[in-house]
Figure (tube, rainbow, N blue to C red):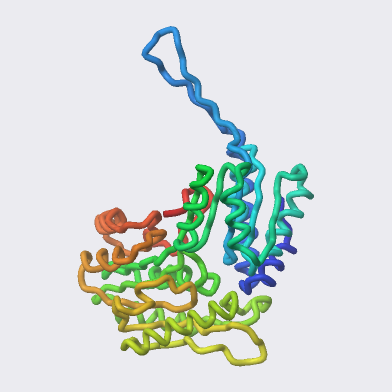
Length: 374
């Protein structure tokens, strides 16, 4: 195993994940190393037929070269390993610029790579608070052949433009605003369980978190009763305590941004059913009680923008077409979720929603075996 328990402590120190989530991230990251190590044995070429009987065309796959990665703070270990695992398995060297809020996890991964026997210079890390300058340098450097970035759409556009100067290959995983659609035929307990897992994991700070929870009117009261009950049971505090469900959000800017989302919704007529207040007690930090906001309309920030925090925006709908139109009303499309026991509806809606990934009766959709992205 490439990783040990100590690295999960690093995750907690950096971001505030509860202990079990941090340990889960380490195991998730390690699964990428295992997967790509096995895939390295199967980097096959192809023999292509030719119109000329005495000729054959061969396709071989070779390392692209040095790969530059700019990684986010919300999964400071696993997002690095998702990128680096594939590149290293293909024979490339990597240069990683971790988020300035979470540099230590990347440094720990670098040390573990050396301990595991990776040659010097194969896994390189640049830590800096001058993210824009370092990012520009990596994107425009002629010796870097590929860039991979996970973050906001706004920054992703800048990355794309800067990489054009050297015609680099790029991979971008950008913003999301995931709809979570619950139809009348859904299993309520299953839908609530999925919503809890999707909305409040990492205190709502993941790119595939449920953002807008759309509930059909026939099941609305039943779903809300159970969802409110489960949300009120969530315990916020020090992640080293095993009874804790949610830790703090990443920093003061993010804390204030989330509070602004709640204030905007309230000013525009929404109801704060539960949560949204700063946690009081002995533990200091940027703690927010998980919040449920109802009577949400599409003019509110919680419906238009990615919240990236423990705030669930609830929208009641009548028809399938209405739900699909709301789901597709934003300009980003990373993930979506659909809960229904009608198999025809499941596939019909999944194909109509304009996102890269759709969870069907499932709140956690990321896995090492499947593609991830827009």
